[in-house]
Image (tube, rainbow, N blue to C red; front, side):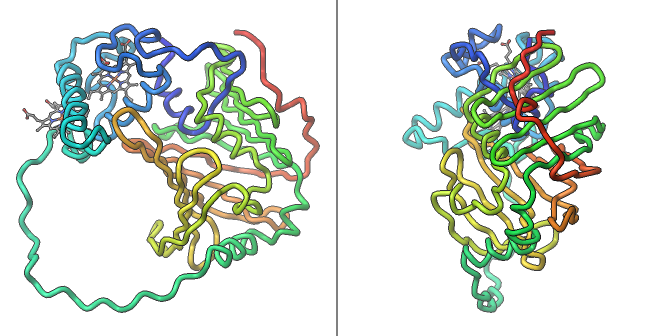
Amino acid sequence: MRLTLTIVLAVVAVSTSFAQQPAPQTAEQQFKNIQIFKGLPATQLEPAMAFISGSLGVQCSYCHVPNSFGKDDKPTKLTARRMIQMVFDLNKGSFKGQRAVSCFTCHRGKPTPVSVPAVGQNLWAPSPTSTPAAPLPSVKQILDRYVQALGGAKALTKVTTRSAKGSRIGADGVLVPEVVHQKAPDKILTVTSYPNVVFSNGFNGTVGWAHSSREGATPLPEQLLVQLKRDAVFYKELKTEELYTSLTVLGRASVRDADAYVIQATPVDGPVEKLFFDVGTGLLVRRYTETDTPLGKLPLQLDYENYRAVDGIKQPFLIHWSMPGRIWGRKVDEIKQNVPLDDAKFNPITTRP
Ligand code: HEC
Ligand code: HEC
């Protein structure tokens, strides 16, 4: 059983690799007791499970005996199987096969849905007259201001390597050492050292890969490779207009109690994103995406916090990833720039456990 919570997290947090990727397996080939998800690519089972957990607001153990995911000994798992079939049938029968209804449509983060409408709202009260919204800046104005807020294009291009030392903040709050090395134009290496296992992943400009000191090279699903490649772009702050095929200002929203401008961004590859820029500081404070799962769209949100200047360039010293039911992160303690980093450092690790 290679599926663990860590892998679910690593996957969404951009772990990845396709070094010697085997032919894609179906769920029933990789797992023991698949009855509904037959034919589904095995890599999509984990996101589907994360979607279910987040929709019901429960942990995996609500339906599974720990480490025996194939067993059917919890009645909730049997109910869930019926529910998955019901959702498929509903969408097929009433919504032209679109994924209009999902677990969340009814469950709203609770195992037992509420079917009685709430009191406390008066739809007949006259609505307050709203003040007209202030005009919005253009995409170019927001992006130019962002580059300026970071320290300016000149300062940014003076940096060619960056090493950030700090910790991964687990969903359980436990910190483990993590280092991220980057080199212009497109190399990245992340090493996360748990007490019993070290996870690494990287992109060397050509190959994306992931490695575990326990399992050796681990496979890298396509969508994660896309994400890893994007993370590897060293001067991405200067290349927003190259990395996205379309950019539109949607309006304003509140991010951690501050006002932000929202840009909808369609990347060259991968799902549509929303980028949030703080109205006051001009800095990027949030990125939000939704990825497809067999049951519906699974949101992932990245929050960039604690910006501090290093060599005249602002960097976030705290990053949080959130998906339904789970928050984890990265805390940076120290950033060093323009330190020599050998190209070979970013190549796939091939050692076997
Ligand atoms: C609400 C119930 C429910 C929750 C919560 C849930 N699962 Fe599942 N899980 C299922 C059902 C139902 C199946 C069987 C699907 C099928 O028959 O195709 C399944 C199957 C699996 C399998 C395949 C096991 C095998 O060998 O056949 C794995 C692995 C798994 N789940 C992992 C997880 C993980 C990890 C989590 C937490 C992130 C989780 N599940 C949360 C209901 C649930
Ligand atoms: C159309 C509404 C609807 C949708 C969609 C829906 N459910 Fe449910 N679900 C219910 C209702 C209603 C109950 C409570 C039934 C009862 O109390 O007897 C329930 C109960 C459950 C339970 C049992 C809870 C318990 O503690 O006994 C599980 C597990 C569950 N649903 C899983 C899912 C999963 C997984 C999905 C998505 C694949 C899903 N449901 C989609 C309406 C829905």
